[in-house]
Structures are given as structure tokens and as C-alpha cells.
Amino acid sequence: MTAVAEGEPPSLDELACFQNDGRAWVVTDAADNPVAFMLVGVVDGNAHIEQVSVDPSHARQGLGRSLLDTASAWAEERGLAALTLTTYAEVPWNAPYYRRLGFQELTVDQMSSGLRHIRDQESARGLDEWPRVAMRRQLDPPSLSS
Image 1: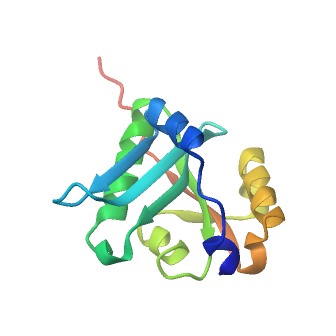
Image 2 (image 1 turned 135 degrees about the horizontal axis):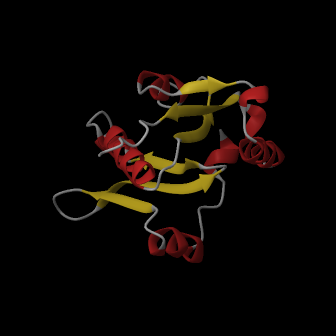
Image 3 (image 1 turned 45 degrees about the vertical axis):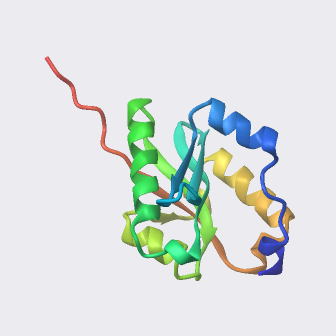
């Protein structure tokens, strides 16, 4: 997965935009070192997980799930309908992991125009060398109180 490893990380300006908009979360360890993070955008009325990453030395501790729960709460507060993401279909900590957390794979016909655009950009960057999918997890609708 050389294209992924050699891909440019978000610039400091891009990260600042996520941070300033309240769409970036970082998990730190006891020594205050970052060990996981997530960046979220909004695509076609859904919270879109732009990137979520957990340091392998901190894997299997629920950090990714916790970050996704944070994104869900953030999206629900804003009345967004779902979480979406694109990921590798066969990497165990990608699509199979997200399926266990309630995400469903979308066919091309089920993808919104924004998700199709993201997939086209990923393909242009060479990320389709390995099978990729778009996924969606419906959020609970806001409750109506009298």
C-alpha cells in the first residue's frame, strides 16, 4: 500500500480548519502524547469521516470506536442523518471493522453525488489499486419533545 504510505498528510492549514470548525478530535495517552485522531467533514447532509487513525501501539483499546461515537454525537447535535466514510474493503481494521460498528457498504447507485466525487478523487490518486468501498451508518433521528 505504497500510495497510502507515501500520501501527503493534511497540511497545517487544513488541520487548522478542521480544528477551528470543531471537526477534529485527538486522543492522548497519560503523557499527553497523541495516539489517535479523527477529522470529520460534511458531505451531502451527512458527517463524513475524512480520516480516523489509531497508533498501532494503542490498537484494540476502543479508541476508534470512541472517536466514531464522538462523531455520531457531533452529527446528531447538528441534525445530520448519518456517518459516511470510504475505506479499504479487505483490510481487517477497515471495512470489516466498520461493518461490526453498524456501517453498511453502499453500491455506486446508493452513493450520494458527494461520495461518488470522493471515490473519483481517490481513484485518481491511485487508491483503487486495492478494493475500496463507501459505507454509511444511519444516526438516530432527533427525538421530539412536547
